[in-house]
Length: 440
Picture 1 (cartoon, one colour):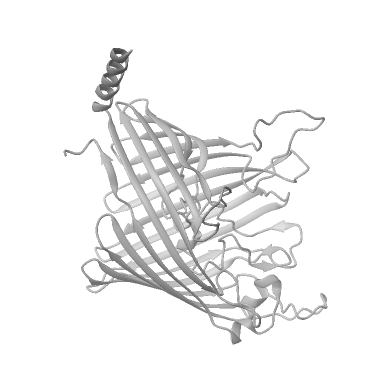
Picture 2: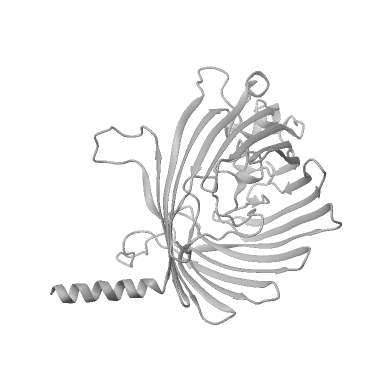
């Protein structure tokens, strides 16, 4: 028996010696101070929130010949969210990624399992890395890639809830999660020396009602491009159209457009841009004209205080009112390993907003389109390749129109009379624990 064990271990180590194995650990605690974060703070009886949330991950990758396995286990917890002696743990511990990828040929590969779908600017499909839990999909992905800068990805997914769903009753079990029931996506991108162009199509099928099993489909078509006009001026743009039927059974007709200019200077790059996300008017009952980024990394784009599209609605009468965002961004290099990012946003509504204090629906009073201004500052110190520190502060100057689309439409002067701000301190430790591909 001892000889068998020794031979087995020898065979295992011999096999592993020809494989590439990497193990990366990550510990990322983040302190946050929230005083009007995501929504306007009340005028009275309010205390700002203050807490620390931590992400801990272990990334394991194995690659040999044409096969790659990747597993990422994570634990997301709030500091102090349980007793020191406990048996029930309220933290989230799950499998963030778990996929196998096989290289079918020089140009073709297939990837199966839990994986991130993150492309270009992440406006529509993103990994959501800012959120401690991130976002991943259970999907099959087929990739074509050649040496001329062309990449084509096709992905599809089929979701179900429960341990082992089946037709156990007269009616099938509905899929009641806030997720697609099934999804098909195709993405293609082509790179040149100074430019890149991408197209995306996604078909998103959702169960309409909790007590129903019918599925309706919303389609998203996207065009994304960027390039350098000169050595110092860059141009980027995005355009999306959404059609079909949403999860509420409403017809969708929505648009999104972005245009952005980057100017290289001797001191710092300056980025000027604007977004237009269509919205649904209060009068448009039964319609959905509001752009929905669905699986985008919205914290990256619409202000770090997350007032728009980050797990919280903005609108009137249950209708999303869309957004116009004019922004100015830059990133100063303060010293070696020290940078300061500064963003300014001017938010407006693309549709008419009404004073909700007037209860007469036949005599609604229109408000201005201005929603407010947000200033975001983020200082970053790269301590080493494995450690970095970020400190951020954001301040929102909101208008009464912002009041009308937030907090359930309550308008009580909280925008003009109260300070709305947010701050965070985050440190990330991400060392490489093992890499057999590197020489020791």
